[in-house]
Image 1 (cartoon, rainbow, N blue to C red):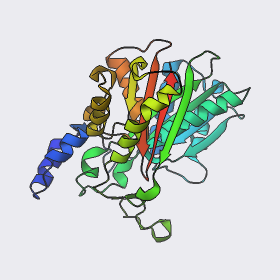
Image 2 (cartoon, one colour):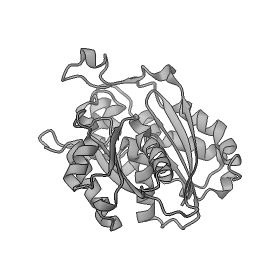
Image 3 (cartoon, rainbow, N blue to C red):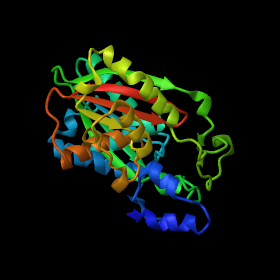
Length: 311
Protein backbone atom coordinates (compact mmCIF):
# COMPACT_ATOMS: atom_id res chain seq x y z
CA UNK A 1 0.00 0.00 0.00
CA UNK A 2 1.26 3.48 -0.87
CA UNK A 3 0.27 6.66 0.91
CA UNK A 4 -0.21 9.49 -1.54
CA UNK A 5 1.26 12.00 0.90
CA UNK A 6 4.72 10.96 -0.32
CA UNK A 7 3.72 11.56 -3.94
CA UNK A 8 2.17 14.92 -3.08
CA UNK A 9 5.38 15.97 -1.32
CA UNK A 10 7.47 14.76 -4.29
CA UNK A 11 5.61 16.96 -6.76
CA UNK A 12 5.21 19.92 -4.43
CA UNK A 13 9.01 20.00 -4.10
CA UNK A 14 9.08 20.35 -7.91
CA UNK A 15 6.69 23.30 -7.66
CA UNK A 16 3.76 21.26 -9.01
CA UNK A 17 0.58 22.07 -7.10
CA UNK A 18 -1.21 18.84 -6.24
CA UNK A 19 -4.27 20.29 -4.51
CA UNK A 20 -6.29 20.58 -7.72
CA UNK A 21 -5.49 16.96 -8.66
CA UNK A 22 -6.31 15.78 -5.16
CA UNK A 23 -9.66 17.61 -5.22
CA UNK A 24 -10.52 16.14 -8.63
CA UNK A 25 -9.47 12.53 -8.06
CA UNK A 26 -9.97 12.07 -4.33
CA UNK A 27 -7.14 9.71 -3.36
CA UNK A 28 -5.44 8.89 -0.09
CA UNK A 29 -3.92 5.42 -0.49
CA UNK A 30 -3.25 3.01 -3.37
CA UNK A 31 -2.01 -0.53 -3.77
CA UNK A 32 1.05 -1.02 -5.96
CA UNK A 33 3.11 -4.19 -6.40
CA UNK A 34 6.73 -3.91 -5.37
CA UNK A 35 9.38 -4.01 -8.08
CA UNK A 36 10.63 -7.40 -6.90
CA UNK A 37 7.14 -8.94 -6.85
CA UNK A 38 6.62 -12.02 -9.02
CA UNK A 39 2.90 -11.30 -9.32
CA UNK A 40 1.44 -10.79 -12.79
CA UNK A 41 -2.04 -9.99 -13.98
CA UNK A 42 -2.40 -13.70 -14.70
CA UNK A 43 -1.44 -14.88 -11.21
CA UNK A 44 -3.57 -12.17 -9.61
CA UNK A 45 -6.46 -13.07 -11.90
CA UNK A 46 -6.23 -16.76 -11.02
CA UNK A 47 -6.32 -15.96 -7.30
CA UNK A 48 -9.28 -13.61 -7.74
CA UNK A 49 -11.12 -16.30 -9.71
CA UNK A 50 -10.46 -18.91 -7.02
CA UNK A 51 -11.72 -16.46 -4.41
CA UNK A 52 -15.04 -15.72 -6.10
CA UNK A 53 -15.69 -19.39 -6.86
CA UNK A 54 -15.17 -20.24 -3.20
CA UNK A 55 -17.24 -17.31 -1.95
CA UNK A 56 -20.08 -18.07 -4.38
CA UNK A 57 -19.95 -21.81 -3.69
CA UNK A 58 -19.91 -22.43 -7.45
CA UNK A 59 -17.71 -25.13 -8.96
CA UNK A 60 -15.47 -24.41 -11.94
CA UNK A 61 -17.41 -27.25 -13.62
CA UNK A 62 -20.45 -24.97 -13.54
CA UNK A 63 -18.67 -22.14 -15.41
CA UNK A 64 -19.56 -21.97 -19.11
CA UNK A 65 -17.55 -18.87 -20.08
CA UNK A 66 -14.36 -17.29 -18.75
CA UNK A 67 -13.67 -13.68 -19.70
CA UNK A 68 -10.36 -12.04 -18.75
CA UNK A 69 -10.41 -8.23 -18.75
CA UNK A 70 -7.03 -6.47 -18.80
CA UNK A 71 -5.11 -3.62 -20.37
CA UNK A 72 -1.90 -5.32 -19.23
CA UNK A 73 -2.34 -9.06 -19.97
CA UNK A 74 0.56 -11.41 -19.37
CA UNK A 75 0.15 -13.17 -22.74
CA UNK A 76 -1.14 -12.46 -26.21
CA UNK A 77 -0.92 -16.10 -27.34
CA UNK A 78 -2.75 -17.99 -25.99
CA UNK A 79 -5.18 -15.64 -24.35
CA UNK A 80 -4.96 -15.51 -20.59
CA UNK A 81 -8.54 -16.73 -20.17
CA UNK A 82 -7.31 -20.10 -21.47
CA UNK A 83 -4.43 -20.00 -18.96
CA UNK A 84 -6.96 -19.31 -16.19
CA UNK A 85 -9.17 -22.14 -17.47
CA UNK A 86 -6.19 -24.52 -17.23
CA UNK A 87 -5.20 -23.32 -13.75
CA UNK A 88 -8.73 -23.78 -12.44
CA UNK A 89 -9.36 -27.10 -14.19
CA UNK A 90 -12.28 -25.87 -16.29
CA UNK A 91 -14.44 -28.20 -18.38
CA UNK A 92 -13.78 -28.56 -22.09
CA UNK A 93 -17.02 -26.98 -23.30
CA UNK A 94 -16.09 -23.52 -21.97
CA UNK A 95 -15.86 -20.29 -23.96
CA UNK A 96 -12.61 -18.45 -23.10
CA UNK A 97 -11.56 -15.03 -24.33
CA UNK A 98 -9.65 -11.91 -23.32
CA UNK A 99 -11.02 -8.41 -23.73
CA UNK A 100 -9.28 -5.03 -23.60
CA UNK A 101 -11.54 -2.00 -23.67
CA UNK A 102 -9.41 -0.18 -21.10
CA UNK A 103 -11.39 1.18 -18.15
CA UNK A 104 -14.79 0.31 -19.58
CA UNK A 105 -13.70 -3.32 -20.03
CA UNK A 106 -15.68 -4.98 -17.23
CA UNK A 107 -18.80 -3.04 -18.27
CA UNK A 108 -18.47 -4.37 -21.84
CA UNK A 109 -17.60 -7.87 -20.59
CA UNK A 110 -20.74 -7.93 -18.44
CA UNK A 111 -22.86 -6.73 -21.37
CA UNK A 112 -21.48 -9.40 -23.72
CA UNK A 113 -21.59 -12.17 -21.11
CA UNK A 114 -25.25 -11.47 -20.35
CA UNK A 115 -26.13 -11.63 -24.03
CA UNK A 116 -24.10 -14.84 -24.50
CA UNK A 117 -25.87 -16.53 -21.58
CA UNK A 118 -29.27 -15.37 -22.78
CA UNK A 119 -28.64 -16.52 -26.34
CA UNK A 120 -27.01 -19.86 -25.51
CA UNK A 121 -29.39 -22.46 -24.18
CA UNK A 122 -26.73 -24.62 -22.53
CA UNK A 123 -24.80 -21.76 -20.87
CA UNK A 124 -25.61 -20.90 -17.26
CA UNK A 125 -22.66 -19.07 -15.65
CA UNK A 126 -19.91 -16.73 -16.81
CA UNK A 127 -16.79 -15.90 -14.81
CA UNK A 128 -15.42 -12.39 -15.41
CA UNK A 129 -11.94 -11.58 -14.11
CA UNK A 130 -10.36 -8.11 -14.17
CA UNK A 131 -6.65 -7.66 -13.45
CA UNK A 132 -4.24 -4.79 -13.96
CA UNK A 133 -0.56 -4.24 -13.27
CA UNK A 134 -0.47 -0.64 -14.40
CA UNK A 135 2.54 0.23 -12.26
CA UNK A 136 4.68 -1.34 -15.01
CA UNK A 137 3.61 1.14 -17.66
CA UNK A 138 2.57 4.33 -15.87
CA UNK A 139 4.85 7.34 -15.62
CA UNK A 140 5.59 8.10 -11.98
CA UNK A 141 6.68 11.59 -13.02
CA UNK A 142 3.22 12.36 -14.39
CA UNK A 143 1.30 13.89 -11.46
CA UNK A 144 -2.00 12.30 -12.57
CA UNK A 145 -0.88 8.72 -13.20
CA UNK A 146 1.54 8.68 -10.26
CA UNK A 147 -1.31 9.64 -7.96
CA UNK A 148 -4.21 7.66 -9.33
CA UNK A 149 -3.92 3.95 -10.10
CA UNK A 150 -3.71 0.73 -8.11
CA UNK A 151 -2.53 -2.69 -9.25
CA UNK A 152 -5.54 -4.93 -8.74
CA UNK A 153 -7.52 -8.07 -9.45
CA UNK A 154 -11.25 -8.56 -9.05
CA UNK A 155 -13.63 -11.28 -10.23
CA UNK A 156 -17.38 -11.83 -10.33
CA UNK A 157 -19.82 -14.41 -11.68
CA UNK A 158 -22.81 -13.71 -13.91
CA UNK A 159 -25.56 -16.28 -13.42
CA UNK A 160 -28.59 -16.94 -15.61
CA UNK A 161 -31.53 -17.69 -13.32
CA UNK A 162 -34.53 -17.07 -15.62
CA UNK A 163 -35.90 -14.42 -13.25
CA UNK A 164 -36.83 -10.80 -14.01
CA UNK A 165 -33.43 -9.71 -12.63
CA UNK A 166 -30.45 -8.87 -14.81
CA UNK A 167 -29.45 -6.59 -17.65
CA UNK A 168 -32.27 -4.34 -18.84
CA UNK A 169 -30.60 -1.93 -21.25
CA UNK A 170 -27.26 -0.44 -22.28
CA UNK A 171 -26.20 2.68 -24.16
CA UNK A 172 -22.70 3.43 -25.54
CA UNK A 173 -21.06 6.69 -26.55
CA UNK A 174 -17.72 6.95 -28.38
CA UNK A 175 -15.77 10.16 -29.09
CA UNK A 176 -12.65 9.02 -30.94
CA UNK A 177 -11.26 12.58 -31.22
CA UNK A 178 -9.57 11.71 -27.90
CA UNK A 179 -7.79 8.67 -29.36
CA UNK A 180 -4.37 10.34 -28.90
CA UNK A 181 -4.93 11.52 -25.31
CA UNK A 182 -3.93 8.27 -23.59
CA UNK A 183 -1.56 5.92 -25.44
CA UNK A 184 0.44 2.76 -24.81
CA UNK A 185 2.80 2.04 -26.37
CA UNK A 186 3.17 5.76 -27.09
CA UNK A 187 4.23 5.09 -30.71
CA UNK A 188 2.57 1.71 -31.18
CA UNK A 189 4.03 -1.79 -31.02
CA UNK A 190 5.84 -1.30 -34.32
CA UNK A 191 8.11 1.14 -32.45
CA UNK A 192 7.88 -0.45 -29.01
CA UNK A 193 10.73 -0.31 -26.45
CA UNK A 194 10.67 -2.27 -23.20
CA UNK A 195 11.06 0.91 -21.13
CA UNK A 196 8.13 2.68 -22.79
CA UNK A 197 5.61 4.30 -20.48
CA UNK A 198 2.01 5.22 -21.17
CA UNK A 199 1.46 8.69 -22.56
CA UNK A 200 -1.30 10.45 -20.60
CA UNK A 201 -2.31 13.97 -21.54
CA UNK A 202 -2.95 15.58 -18.15
CA UNK A 203 -5.72 17.68 -19.68
CA UNK A 204 -7.79 14.53 -20.32
CA UNK A 205 -10.16 14.22 -17.37
CA UNK A 206 -13.11 12.33 -18.82
CA UNK A 207 -15.34 15.41 -18.65
CA UNK A 208 -16.86 14.58 -22.06
CA UNK A 209 -18.21 11.34 -20.63
CA UNK A 210 -19.76 13.37 -17.80
CA UNK A 211 -21.59 15.49 -20.37
CA UNK A 212 -22.77 12.27 -22.01
CA UNK A 213 -24.19 11.12 -18.66
CA UNK A 214 -25.82 14.49 -17.92
CA UNK A 215 -27.43 14.62 -21.35
CA UNK A 216 -28.60 11.03 -21.64
CA UNK A 217 -29.38 9.52 -18.22
CA UNK A 218 -32.96 10.77 -18.02
CA UNK A 219 -33.72 9.85 -21.64
CA UNK A 220 -32.11 6.41 -21.13
CA UNK A 221 -34.25 5.77 -18.05
CA UNK A 222 -37.38 7.16 -19.70
CA UNK A 223 -37.14 4.65 -22.56
CA UNK A 224 -37.17 1.97 -19.86
CA UNK A 225 -40.16 3.60 -18.12
CA UNK A 226 -38.18 4.65 -15.08
CA UNK A 227 -37.32 7.93 -13.39
CA UNK A 228 -34.03 8.77 -11.73
CA UNK A 229 -35.79 8.73 -8.35
CA UNK A 230 -36.53 5.03 -8.86
CA UNK A 231 -32.83 4.10 -9.08
CA UNK A 232 -31.68 2.52 -5.83
CA UNK A 233 -27.91 2.60 -6.45
CA UNK A 234 -25.59 4.44 -8.84
CA UNK A 235 -22.33 2.70 -9.73
CA UNK A 236 -20.12 5.32 -11.35
CA UNK A 237 -16.56 5.22 -12.64
CA UNK A 238 -14.22 5.64 -9.69
CA UNK A 239 -11.68 7.63 -11.71
CA UNK A 240 -12.66 11.04 -10.38
CA UNK A 241 -14.72 12.20 -7.40
CA UNK A 242 -15.09 15.55 -9.18
CA UNK A 243 -16.87 13.89 -12.10
CA UNK A 244 -19.11 11.90 -9.76
CA UNK A 245 -20.04 15.05 -7.86
CA UNK A 246 -20.97 16.85 -11.09
CA UNK A 247 -23.50 14.14 -11.91
CA UNK A 248 -24.70 13.95 -8.30
CA UNK A 249 -25.27 17.71 -8.06
CA UNK A 250 -26.92 17.97 -11.47
CA UNK A 251 -29.56 15.37 -10.63
CA UNK A 252 -29.68 16.15 -6.87
CA UNK A 253 -28.81 12.55 -6.03
CA UNK A 254 -28.44 11.39 -2.42
CA UNK A 255 -24.74 10.91 -1.64
CA UNK A 256 -25.44 7.62 0.12
CA UNK A 257 -26.63 6.13 -3.19
CA UNK A 258 -23.26 6.73 -4.91
CA UNK A 259 -20.43 4.69 -3.36
CA UNK A 260 -16.85 5.91 -3.85
CA UNK A 261 -14.05 3.55 -2.85
CA UNK A 262 -11.05 4.95 -4.75
CA UNK A 263 -10.02 7.17 -1.84
CA UNK A 264 -8.87 4.11 0.09
CA UNK A 265 -8.27 1.57 -2.69
CA UNK A 266 -7.00 3.73 -5.54
CA UNK A 267 -8.38 3.53 -9.06
CA UNK A 268 -8.55 -0.04 -10.36
CA UNK A 269 -9.56 0.67 -13.95
CA UNK A 270 -12.12 -1.66 -15.53
CA UNK A 271 -13.31 -3.19 -12.27
CA UNK A 272 -13.90 0.13 -10.49
CA UNK A 273 -17.74 0.36 -10.60
CA UNK A 274 -18.08 -3.30 -9.65
CA UNK A 275 -15.54 -2.99 -6.86
CA UNK A 276 -17.62 -0.04 -5.61
CA UNK A 277 -20.65 -2.38 -5.54
CA UNK A 278 -18.67 -4.98 -3.61
CA UNK A 279 -17.53 -2.41 -1.04
CA UNK A 280 -21.04 -0.97 -0.76
CA UNK A 281 -22.54 -4.38 -0.01
CA UNK A 282 -19.81 -5.22 2.48
CA UNK A 283 -19.76 -1.88 4.31
CA UNK A 284 -23.20 -0.31 3.86
CA UNK A 285 -25.99 -2.74 3.02
CA UNK A 286 -26.93 -5.69 0.83
CA UNK A 287 -29.00 -4.84 -2.22
CA UNK A 288 -32.46 -6.37 -2.28
CA UNK A 289 -33.97 -8.34 -5.14
CA UNK A 290 -35.79 -6.08 -7.57
CA UNK A 291 -33.78 -2.92 -6.85
CA UNK A 292 -32.55 -0.88 -9.82
CA UNK A 293 -28.87 -0.10 -10.43
CA UNK A 294 -27.53 2.42 -12.94
CA UNK A 295 -23.91 2.05 -14.07
CA UNK A 296 -21.91 4.79 -15.80
CA UNK A 297 -18.25 4.43 -16.71
CA UNK A 298 -15.69 5.29 -19.39
CA UNK A 299 -12.51 4.08 -21.07
CA UNK A 300 -9.62 5.79 -22.82
CA UNK A 301 -10.06 6.87 -26.38
CA UNK A 302 -12.73 7.61 -25.23
CA UNK A 303 -15.79 5.39 -24.86
CA UNK A 304 -18.50 5.71 -22.22
CA UNK A 305 -21.58 3.72 -21.35
CA UNK A 306 -24.79 3.59 -19.33
CA UNK A 307 -26.19 0.28 -18.11
CA UNK A 308 -29.47 -0.37 -16.35
CA UNK A 309 -29.60 -3.45 -14.17
CA UNK A 310 -32.34 -5.00 -12.06
CA UNK A 311 -30.84 -6.74 -9.07
